[in-house]
Structures are given as structure tokens and as C-alpha cells.
Length: 157
Image (cartoon, rainbow, N blue to C red; front, top):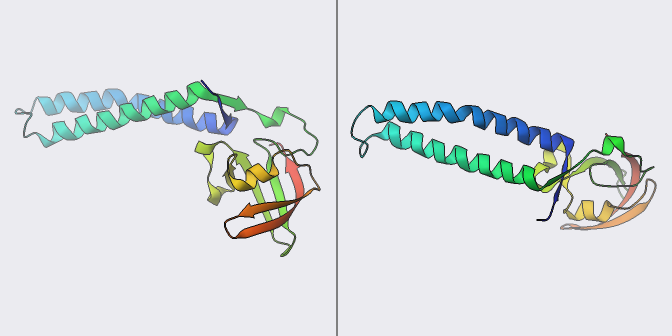
């Protein structure tokens, strides 16, 4: 089974979600039992809704447990890579053409959220940055064309 990289933060969020879902299990079971007591199950909307909720909850639990089982948690705060861009690092880029500054953290696929400046390790930007050093100039192919960036700062938070 191939391991999937994940940040410490990503693992923590998955474990919190799993705990929340595991606490919902008995509540859903109680709702099913209460709905069952209402009579005929064929026409019992509460029963069918509770069963559907149970199915969704169980699927989410299996999904999270699988993700945690294949995760390779990488804690970059304990690494010193002296300015090298690696998985989990936070990179500040300067667009050479516009002098616009952008900051991204390179994270696992499930953790990516562009609005929160977290990009997937498999994204074109991250692939173009991995292995480069602070101060390097990189050309990254984007859907809008090639972009020229300078790596201003690399942090391991």
C-alpha cells in the first residue's frame, strides 16, 4: 500500500472529524430505535432518514480511517532543510513580472485549500517548487501560461 504524505495539521483535523463521527454513532442508533417504535417501517420517514444518516456516517468513518491508515505524517517543524522547498514547507514567492507576493504551504491532496493558501503537493506550482532553494528563480507552467517566480522565503512551520 502506497503511503500518502500528510501534514501534522491534516492528521489532527482528520482525527477530530473521526472522533466527532464516532460520537454520532450511538445518537444515530438511538434515532433508528425510536423511529422503529413508531410502527410500520415501509412508510416511516423518520426511520428511513435515520438509516440514510447512519449509512453516510459509516461511509465517512471508513473513508477517514482509510486515509489515516495510508498517511505518512511529515512534521516539517522538526526538519532543517536550510531553505529547500519540501512537502509541508511554506513558500513565499514573488512574481518577477508584477512584484506580487504570494505565500503557499505545500500539503497533501486532501488538505489543499487555495483560499487558505494551501496547495496540493501534486499541483503544477508545488511540483515546480519542490527541491528548489530560497533565492532560486523558477518558471512554472500554469493554465494562464508560464509564470516566472523568485522564491523569497521558505519556512518550516
